[in-house]
Image (cartoon, rainbow over all chains, first blue to last red; front, side, top):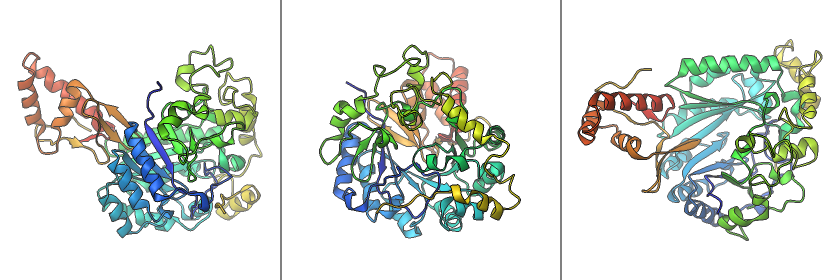
Length: 377
Length: 91
């Protein structure tokens, strides 16, 4: 028997009022017509609770785009799950927030794109920044735990200290600083998003100083980008080891991006139970354990720590989902990562805030490389 | 950043709550959970935001008579301070 999963990632819709260039959603989004019903989600949360899962992370798209979100949160909470709402905040009113907290919402994670309004709205492809600030103050008037999430990249890292100070004023319990991961839309936009080594090194210092300054007040969780790491990330804590993700149409995936892998068929909650999918389905078993591993993973001491890295990244960058994650410095195809890093650090590299003379010039220089996330049909 | 004082009233920090089953109790927080067994569980079950640190210590010293009372105080103080740094406990 495989140990039970720990958390459920519920992508309740792929619709989103924001169009962030770093979005991790697949480029092929699930349409509204195929979305799971309220009753189907209720059954999923019950099954998740019985399976011993601890957390339900409601995400999207924008989960607030579902009019039944309060019911979904109530059901997840009633099933014993810790409920986390991952949101842009668009669509949240005081009344709606109160209803969510009343039914047991444990935690809300609000995203910001930048501290500077022009840049934040540019990254999101929507005028959302001012509304988010209002919301952050509103959230603090309710009894719910609060995290601010900031995705960082080439276009907002130069003033990270300013952005942390900006977020600090909103008094969250926690700040999550997540370097962009290059899947979905972010991979399409990688050239404008991948930071330079100098940007990254400065950011590490800024985060360390902020951690020290805010200790005991605000916890900072920071995710280091794998393009600059020596070893790959233990993606999702290993394939089929901790997490199940359910997409808006009911497909059950081991991670956000897994659908890019050709030849794998993902089961649907409309046809199978979560337990069967977790224990028995070929897709969840495909990269579980070590049998699938190639060298150098198979004989590597780190195979039980990083599990060979990310299967989707291996597919996306090498064409082979069974290859060692090219982010690993020991990977035979590590050169594809090195090439991207080299380009990001070249003298004539893509513009970033400190090299452009103004925000308008920055926008102009990057305009042709900037692909906004679209919505499903 | 300081250890709890006798008058502190330790409690779970916002966003943290008990979960799991009676046999396997955990404290849930936004991005994870910690499993609590034995003394750690006992200590945190006392941290209800009502009782003071002084009262909690006295209670646990009574319960664990075979252990050195000063060591109990030190251990629990350090334990709570660590959890406070991780934003799991407030006092």
